[in-house]
Image 1 (cartoon, rainbow, N blue to C red):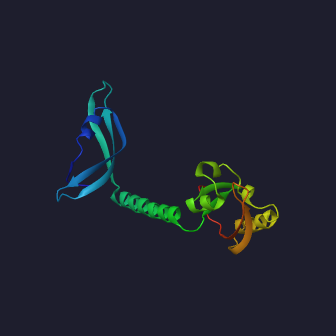
Image 2 (spheres, one colour):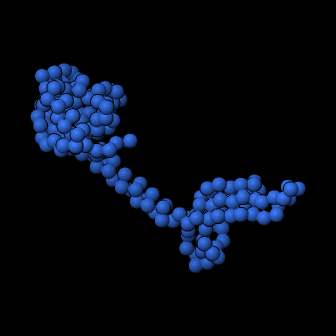
Image 3 (tube, rainbow, N blue to C red):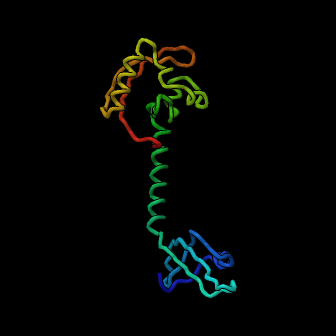
Length: 173
């Protein structure tokens, strides 16, 4: 980056230390464009601890910041879609409920703070449990499962019929 001036005066304060590592700031170019920068510097000293120079590195991270903003917007849209869906959506990992949307909580007749500590198969009717486990295993092997019916047991022991689809996704590792 050439011919820029600092828009953030705090960097000068930070330079009184010997090193600045990965300080994010905004430079403003001569034509007044804002440039997101990752700044690092180190003061060079001689054997008498006198300052003899400084090494500075500024990396333009404008595209990275733009990509982060696009990702943040996409995640917000996804979250809004899942939270407001009229279908129950669930993510099961290691037989534990990792994500449960409000509609599924309503279907199961539970409160959100009570449902996410349970194992998924706890909710399946005992007569349907083996078939659901089989479909779950098939989905883990990569097979896309479309619309299979089974019964669940709600909080008040009410039995409800459900129809589910399952696909394998990568979830937090």
